[in-house]
Image 1 (tube, rainbow, N blue to C red):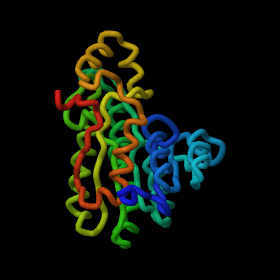
Image 2: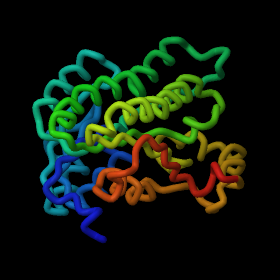
Image 3: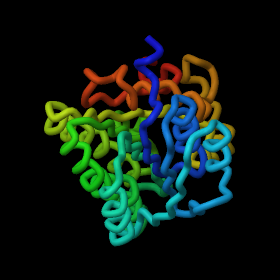
Image 4: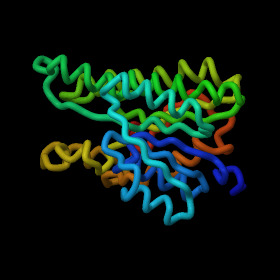
Length: 252
């Protein structure tokens, strides 16, 4: 059974790998045997913490910097990776802008949609060409609880993450018969930079924690098992799902 989760000999591209959830995903894949290409806006070619974590596990690491708010930079990244053998694509790069909907700047809306949705489609489209030609590949998006719910003061983020849920299903409908599995993970309230403002607000933090059946904020490492599952042969007949890893939030 353990062989179903063995990623030895594979190459995984992880966007947003420098910290938080992306960091934990990259480490989990490396622990399962994958070599890692880590992409982030401020990723360095050498000397990063994620590079050390991956190479300490005996895996190869390559760091690439890409500004996902810049469509031209994403296109260059897509061409670069499209020429490589990529077995696994983890679309995790993202950002969030908080402001009430009535006051939410359109510039913030546009930036969030570009980073969290448009760039992810463009990159997936480019990388998936060689997966489809080979008849084998795994694509995993990072969705959100707000792929299911509306959220508060984050209209752009909610729209983008709802779009990721739909995109996951749309790509799966077209690609699953061609050997490429497309799925998504919806993290719950995870203790990362994105939720720092919520955790610093005593009322919001308490209200959130009171609703989580598991009784705690999630850690980035809680995403490890789901990531390896959806990237491995264990999920070969799993297509188009958005898998919550949320401590029971959506079941409440």
